[in-house]
Length: 79
Image (cartoon, rainbow, N blue to C red; front, side):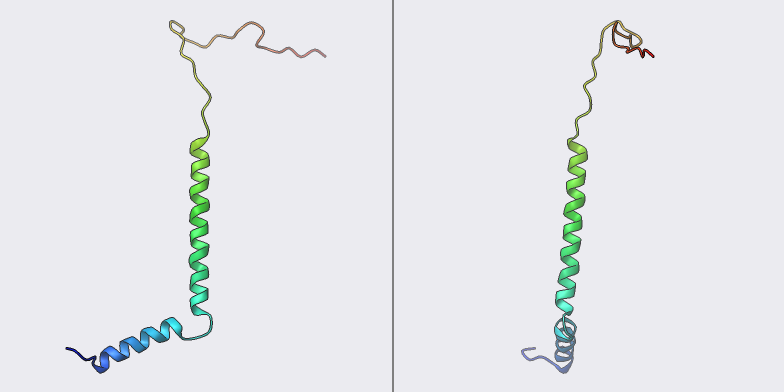
């Protein structure tokens, strides 16, 4: 159990070739990871912006069943 068999060496060699074989594979993978992280952060920021928008204040008046218009709230157009 103290030594590595041929199968262990082959698996380590295959993993090493996958990670370090070829030019720029790791940098391509890390670039894709960075793009994913930036996209995730942008999505989270957009969600926070939507959540932070306050809704207009609503007032509840006792005894009023329907909204009433106040005098002078309508603007009249003159031609």
